Image 1 (cartoon, each protein chain N blue to C red):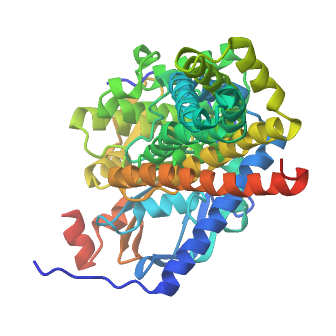
Image 2: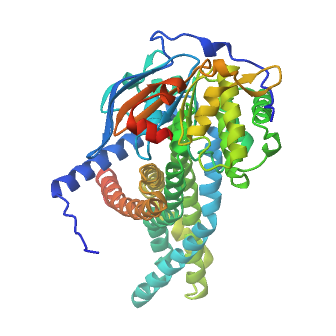
Image 3: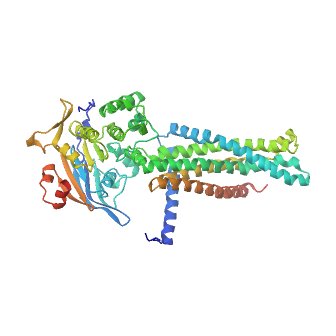
Length: 281
Length: 264
């Protein structure tokens, strides 16, 4: 299914931060009471790349996204986002940084007392942009996620998949340099999942947005690694056989608070680690 | 299944209480400081003023009338023994304006709005809406707490004036219809007995009570943990804490005003 177009491409997306990475975790650890969730993990997300995070339930994948946004503070270690050290910033400073980062929460986290257009246009409205401009941008991103007809509806009137797409629209309306997706296809039917995967691929290939993607669905990540977005046909197409790993896509697997794999699709497929082989089988 | 009892150390309990007081104090201070920082969410404040003020009007009208009438009824039964029924107006006036008007209005609004704020913000916490707001670069204390604090303090001031007036009308109804007190005599005594200190006491209290109701409601809301059960718990705790704090504050404010202006 061809994805609709979003007219303005984001020139800021390719901007290089002082640290050289869109996101960098350096020996980050966090525990809740006695439960160690992340135990000194380190990894980097280069600009323009999408990194899929895997791990069993409770392995700290969603926590990792919240740490990247400064919604949680680690017990130790350093986190850099777009060259800024998140772990040293005050909440007020973080509000500024968060305007350059978009996030799609696991359960969408739409404001249930606001209509779809108010949800999607929340950030531009906060920036005191004129009502006409907000409406234009909201309609544009809603068209991008194929939900323009829901403009005047409340989140409670939408299906799970529609809510997820509205959440994506809300995350991309301000053309963020980094996107964080928390299980965007979780609990959705294959058709809706594929639509969302296509939106993520388009965001990666057309707008060059760096992204961390938490998912349980290995097939979604492999689809992203083996497909690219074709601007000419305006849809996701499979890569020719020899170019299967040419897209900016990598994988990271967490186990018991540690990173046990960080590499591309080819390295993942050929890994000899028993746990990883069992995980991807 | 064996029942396991978990023993909690008194030191841990004390630490939790100190932490809660610290967090509440910080939230309260931040909510006030936000009045001097941009952006000021006037539209949200007006919306809250409508919800809190206009929405609470029916219960304030009913309780104001009832309390005034009851005050007159109880006062009359005592005053009748001394042949001083004409003093009903004075008793109702002082009772309503200095004490019962602000207190009853505060408790009613606490029951209605502290619970509403705690459940609304608590639901937003458990559905990650507050995190989403922070992630979108908006300060939730600025967007959600400060408008509620401003609107509650502002509206409680006027709701108390309405409750006072209706209490006096309720008292007049009882005094005139049941005890035959003359209309002019009642309203003259109501007016003449009041001094600056009474009016000041009666109008400073609702502002403080409004601050307590909104900050307690918001504090319990945004510190909600444990899903929908946690939201229910926060709602109940908010009403109890706000009511108790209103009663304690009322005592100390009254005492302080007596200390400043002297006893009657």
